[in-house]
Length: 290
Image (cartoon, rainbow, N blue to C red):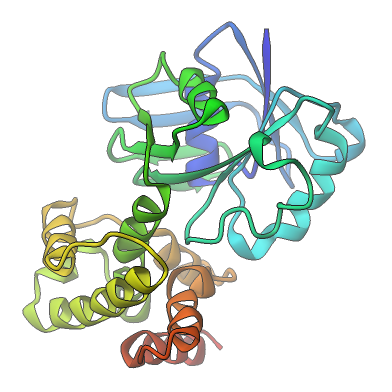
């Protein structure tokens, strides 16, 4: 039996853990701050339930075959405590996070061949501990190497489209283009449908255009029409959909501003590429949330 520990049972982590636990050949443990009774996810195909082992203390944990980190980027410290207990000689680590710097905090933990960065697009919302709403089956992309292919196999029984990509960098920057536009939702505190307003869409396009310029400087192969594609995606989505940055601001939690927009500003400065739209939205959200 393959053992899996999911650190961070939020919207994505809880949804992924519930789906993995549908396979009796997988032993799933959830590492959480607060204990809860089981997982329930309202999926596009109906309700699924799971009863993984729930741990709240790293001292209770033992090494596993796979660790999936699904904490927010600002919560790396809490994940580190779990890794001390969960990582053994053969453990592989998958990082399911936003942004383009997945492995930066964990590169000294394991050799590269046991690290799997993952780009995740699973529209989901955490309604309560262990209770999620999954709006679309979604997808996950990982590098096309041995560890990546083994990661894909873990999800063979699920409707989530998990696959490898030969160009992970481009995949990560393409997802970042979608995420950086979502800062507008967090700023105005309105769901995805606000993108149907042309003025709002123009701001989103400016954010994505800067992302494209910086991503290309970083080596990503991004198309000229990516800003329009992002707007089309927002307009086709559930108008009531709330992205994680928006949800965190509503709840008064820390936000992944640096991973979603700040990184564009930081790397833009490295390449002498102006990023005024992203710098502005970061400043405004920080001021509004402060």
